[in-house]
Image 1 (cartoon, rainbow, N blue to C red):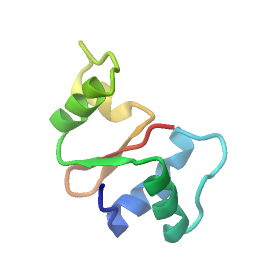
Image 2: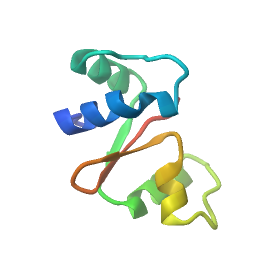
Image 3: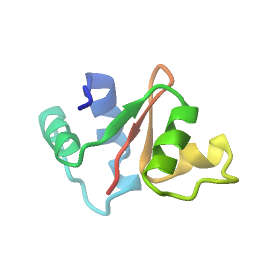
Image 4: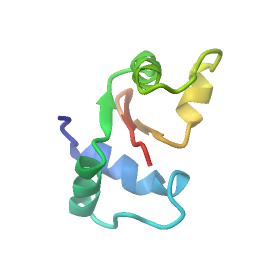
Length: 87
């Protein structure tokens, strides 16, 4: 289970429209509950993003770091971390 600190929650709230047509959360509490429900992952580097997506069965071969960062389910968190939300 992952810990969703305030930076993760704010990053998700700010950019959730990349993944969802309508907001799924409007407050930090709602964001935390949503991320817990969908078991969103927090990783420490873009390399860990790649590893996570590969383990989930996504074909990321040949994708650059920039392409991974632009994936709709990947949210950059200040400090170099990433939140991965499977929608």
